[in-house]
Image 1 (cartoon, rainbow, N blue to C red):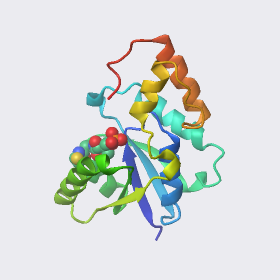
Image 2 (cartoon, protein in one colour; image 1 turned 90 degrees about the horizontal axis):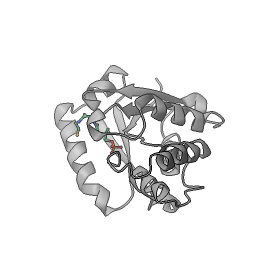
Image 3 (cartoon, rainbow, N blue to C red; image 1 turned 45 degrees about the horizontal axis):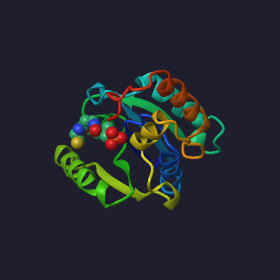
Image 4 (cartoon, rainbow, N blue to C red; image 1 turned 180 degrees about the vertical axis):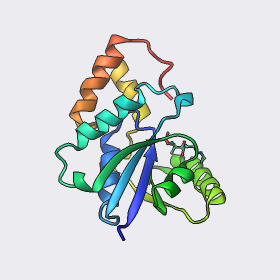
Length: 172
Ligand code: PNS
């Protein structure tokens, strides 16, 4: 049986930090499903389809692409993980500041379904300071994020954010 993990998140948008984590996970798991949360309550900058498209395009030439699926989910994460037959949720940790939220989420997910475990991997040092939120902040203020996100994401961010300068509501 394939070892399968679900890597959930908002991915609004995907960054090189996410891709780094995915590659680390593929050293342990045979297959990883990137599960994009629809979470409209978070008022994402990009629609679900746009977020999924950017992920797919970022992975198009990736040598491990055949071991990665991109999917979406709504409702409880553990229900989705169970439905696809996985037993592991994968999340990244950058700094201590991530810990409290992640701890709460992992324990809640365990309470909801104790057959599913959450695994944390440390992001590579080069990506420790980046997040989707800070990337959006930099782009909206005219900063350069080259090398921090896939090229397709950089292009799309510039198109979207510079066109709607002052669009602050969509920064979760
Ligand atoms: O990238 P994010 O925004 O930190 O990802 C958070 C996400 C989508 C993984 C989390 O909000 C989630 O799992 N949402 C689904 C609802 C759910 O299952 N909530 C209970 C666990 S806290």
